[in-house]
Each structure stands twice: as C-alpha cells, then as structure tokens.
Image (cartoon, rainbow, N blue to C red):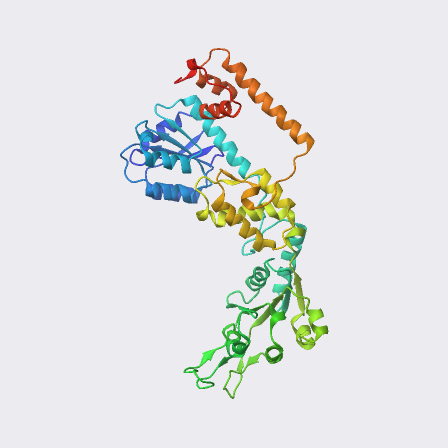
Length: 448
C-alpha cells in the first residue's frame, strides 16, 4: 500500500464519495460503502489518513461515531453537504472525531493541502520511537537496562530452578515473572499468581496447600491449593518478604520435596511447579533481623532478576506513555490525540517514585481531564519544563514572522482562500492565526 493512501468512507454512495477524493492528485484511494468493510480494510492495511462523507438524512450517526472513536489514530477529514453542518449531531461528530472538514462543492486545491497536512501530522505522531518488543515479551522499552533484562529473562526461562525477582514497587515484577513463564518449556501450563501480602495469615496455609473435607469447621468439600493448581506450570509468589515465618517452613518443604500435603490429609501430592518469587524489600536484611528464613532465601535465590526503576530508564518514558495512551484509548476525551512536547519533557523531568504504576495513573487521569487536543504537563499534574532564554527568543521570532506574513498577505487584496493557499495553511487555520495575533479580518474578506 502506498504511503500516500487513504480510506474514504462513503455510506450509501461509494462511487460519488470516491470521486471527491480522487480529485486530489497523488493519493491512492480505497473506498468503503459500509463500516464493516472499512473495519476490514483498516485491519488489512492500517492507514494514516481517512475521509468521511457526511450527508444529511444518512441515518443515525452512533455507529459511525463509535467507529471513528475506535480508530482515533487515523487523521479523519470530513466532507459534508452544507445542510448536514446545520444539524447539531453532524457538527458534534466532526468536532469530536475529525481534524478538519470541507463542505461541498469541494475546493480541490485546498483538499489536497488538507490531506497532505493530515499525513504530516500522522508522521509526527509516529516519530515517537517504538520499543521493538519481541513477540510475547511484555516489557516495553529500548533502554540498555530493559534490553539487558529481556536477555536475562530468555536465559533464565530456559532453566527450571527457582527465580527471585527484585525491584521497587510498581516496576512490573509480575510482568517479568509472566515473561519467564511464557518463554519457558512450561508456557503451555498454568501461571498462578499469589500475593502473599493480600491473604490473611490465618488463611495462608489452606489457600496455598488446600484442605480435605472435614479438615476444619466449614470445610464441606475438599479444595485444591494454589500451589497444587500450578502443577505443570509456574507459581508466582509476589511480596514473598511478607510471608509469615510459620508458612515459610511449609514453603521450604514444598521446594525441597516438590509435593504438598493438604490440611487434614495423610498423604502428600506431587506437584511439578516452578516457583518465581518477587520482593521489593531487602531479603538479606530480613534474614539478618530474623524475619525471613535463611535456608528459604537461598532456595529461592538460585536465579535472580533485577527490575530497574523507571528513573533509570527514562528513554522508555515516551514509548511507555504512548502504549498506555493506546491501551486506555476508550477512556480518553474525544478530541485528545496524544502528548504535547511539553508533556513529554515533563515526563522526563519527573523522578517517578511510583515507577510504571505511577505513570499509568497519571496518563489515565490526563486522558480523562485534558481539554485540548494534546496532553499538557498540567494534565499529568507535573510541572512543565522551564524554557531557556534561547527558546524564548526563538518563540518571539516565530510569532513576529507569523504576524508579518499574514499582514503582508492581507494587504494585497487577495481572497482568504488564495492567501491560505499561498501560506500553505487551511482557511480555518488562517482565521485561527489571525485571531491569535489580534489581526482584524477586513470586511472585503468576509464570506470569500
């Protein structure tokens, strides 16, 4: 598919819709007369630019709005009949989901410029570096630390010994454990996560090892324990440092004998499960204080993986933020398209004490609360970067250049459409720039 390809959605009259767009030179046009066809075309070949034909009386817009919301990454241009834009539902659809619009009859020159601008905006968004993550490796990023960790996971996964994953809270230790499981020979078996800090100490024994019917009051039937349910796969013991001492001895026995004994049972059951444990505390210090068994520590720490905190892999912030923006796209404000450069700079400046979990929290909040088309530092509840003196001077020069170009063009008696074409912007953008710089619109230009 050509890099200058676009999808034209023309419900009910695909031929007429395609003719409008084909008049713009240099574009390969794919036309869909139904939304399911458009969905299939986008799945087969993702496109950066799309055109939506809107005619009054075309029926409900709910399905079209849902389609445009789902495919928010496409730069949508609306081509509307003038009567359609007099109706509130059509105006709302265009305002929320389209980056620009044209009314019929279409100005071919301006349409070509709008499509080119949309292609350029899409290219800018795609400039955020991708992580190059191999299949089934859910650790996003391209920093040295994360590349090293992925290599270590591949090596560790090939073995069968227990693994201890270390890292601060919120760094993604469970993702690392899942990656070890998914890249191992046990990938076809179960992966059973257990949060040792979330189960009441009085229930840990029965939850981990199970029980027989009548083992205690209320045990009306036998129950398989979590360790036993991981047979043939891997068991992930999160927050292993919070495991009470009395359960530590039972876990040590399981690691030594590869079997469990249910409460109330007289026989043990063989269990073939690999143990991957994780902790954010210093287990060596816990061993020294006597709150963690030394023999269990050495049993668990056969192979170890250290998950780097986010502050040590800041080059991963942009791809991570973009990933979470896409993952939670359904929650975003309708016109939100991504992150401003100021927001990305603010992400880099922050120290991230809560690591990836904090990043997810800030991104999701910003996606709901942001009012513009791009997330700003304030939306992330972060301070924006302080501009340098050179940056301030450059901004002033740019403002003066914009104002001078517009004023000189307005003084030669040309129409707004022609001036916009010469300046390389749409007529709507020209009006916005005039308002930005406080340039009044002469009466002779109104309506032209």
